[in-house]
Length: 110
Length: 113
Image (cartoon, rainbow over all chains, first blue to last red; front, side, top):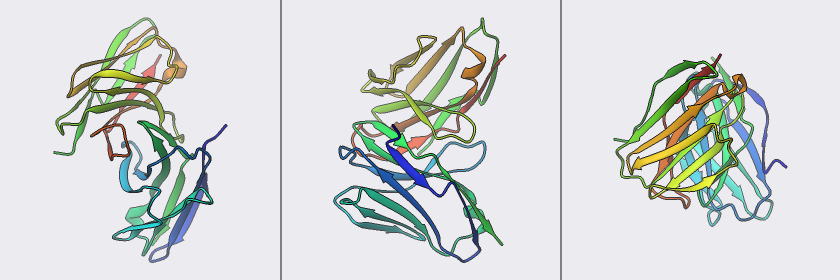
């Protein structure tokens, strides 16, 4: 049973456009929702994270929107740049156990 | 210093070998993690240590043996691995177990031949 579903699997966006990645979770015990960026051959790096008592969090060009009742959260990347091309993972965590979505490969075309 | 250092970066081992992966952090974090990541897949949690004690073992085969000698170091001892164990092994650390930022190392690319 997949606890965190992520979509789309891949995404192509023009430079300057908005990239949107969505995740849905099932376990209401999750209390921390991070997004990670991973480049080939590198470990994941935390981009931004949110807790369920907040509906939106913005850091620079990255925004998380969180809908607790729908058990969904999304990552918005504004003004997408070619350097943003990477794989993005959402995750849901509780007491040290993190469950990752399957990942979204983002390609930003110049 | 927000770095998690993993050694070696690459490792090739035979199925009868014994090897160890090492992970080090100097951020004062008290939770440390081992993940396994296959190509084009998300990281999968293997073990979690909290205050140097094993907190979570995600039903990992005994050919993988974790060790936390002190609060800064985490090892993963490998013995009698199978080719399907070939993957990127990631170490991570966080301040604690509850909703805190996790920092990942660059990983060890393991190939079992």
